[in-house]
Image 1 (cartoon, helix red, strand yellow):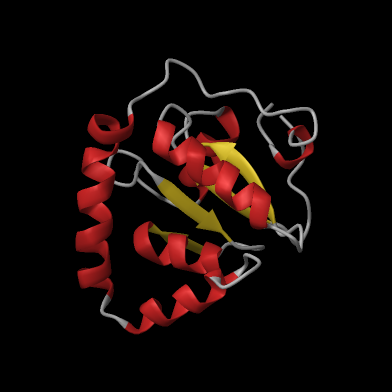
Image 2: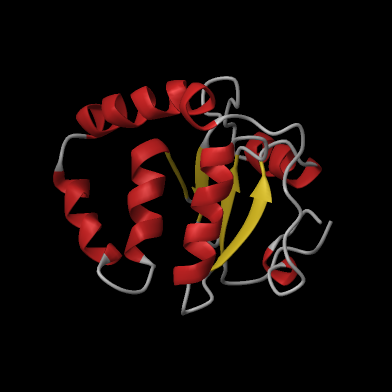
Length: 139
C-alpha cells in the first residue's frame, strides 16, 4: 500500500465490477490535471479510508470520492464531482448537481443495483498497466 499523496482526490471503486473498472479507465484517460488516485473498496486502504469516515460499505458499495482532507462524496454527487475535474466537456455535467440529490441518487442507485447484471463481475480487480500503476494506491 502506497502513502496517500497530498492534494490528490481519491476515487474508491468496486474493484470486481466491470462497469466500475471501465469508469476508472475513463477517468484515467481524461484526468489531464493529474488530480485523481484510485483504490478499490475491497483493498486494505479502501477499508481503512471508509472506516475512518464512518462510511458503511454495505450501503455504499460502488463509488466514493475523497477530497484532500476529510471531505467525501458518495453516489451521484461523487460521479458529478469527478466529472467536474475531467478534461473536455465533462465538467459541464456539474450542472446536474443543482438537481435534488434524492432524484439523482434514485437514478444512480438503479444503475448501481443492476451493474453486475448488465456489465458483469470479475473475480479480481484488473491489474493496471505499468503507465497507470502510479495512480493506484493499493497495488
